[in-house]
Length: 208
Image (cartoon, rainbow, N blue to C red; front, side, top):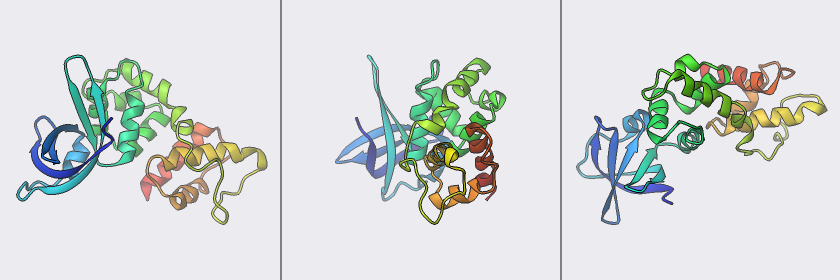
């Protein structure tokens, strides 16, 4: 499995949203999101050294690489393709329309209409994405070890610590710092259900 590419950017194609990165004399063609494409240098000479995170899709007739500027985008891509009916192309379309943070907010708010605006994604598929990923955003990636850091913790009752740790984990995986997450959590009603806490904290973070 190729996790990332670190090499010279030798070709960009905006029409197919793809890039070619040369590593060790081999050019790897990678399909990327529009956000990743926008971050890549537009001048090819001399080849600019770039690093992108990748997901390799193996089929009977082809091996394809999909590339992302950030690990958060890669993480969200991997979550999307676990949903029935969402293939790599649909996942790329969704992440070309949304940043990982904005997609997480749309899922938390159950905004199927917004998600279905992505090419190759209908209303039923958008509904499945919400159904399958809404809880996973809070539980799939335990980055903080289930606790808040001393001196930066959100005041909470003993019984709520697990819920808030889950909320913190879900927000950390989207690329926000621990300080940003804890500051946002202090501004929301932590007695609400977990999904509401995440949605409200995301709204606070996106306004900053």
